[in-house]
Image: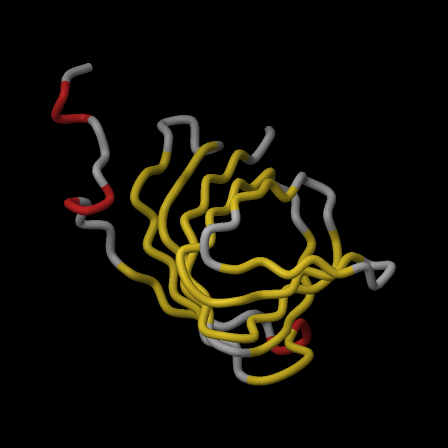
Length: 119
């Protein structure tokens, strides 16, 4: 390993992938999304990058552990019991594997994500 293998998001050439959640998961709006993955570990279980989402709401079912740092915008996470957590620019949190509920973007949202998918 050497210094050239350090991944600097400002200089990473990761390509952006645009998508929408599957139609059956969308509850509200047209939540277009874009992900730019900057690093994927050789084992494939760890990755990190930047995610952006437009206004809308969809169901989520996390099989991975995800650290999030909101860079811009406002979103509301709701668990399957309806409990809500509003997150906005500057918030940092972890969504543990096994979380189910919804993600709703109220204002275009941008976040850094760090994901670990246990084998």
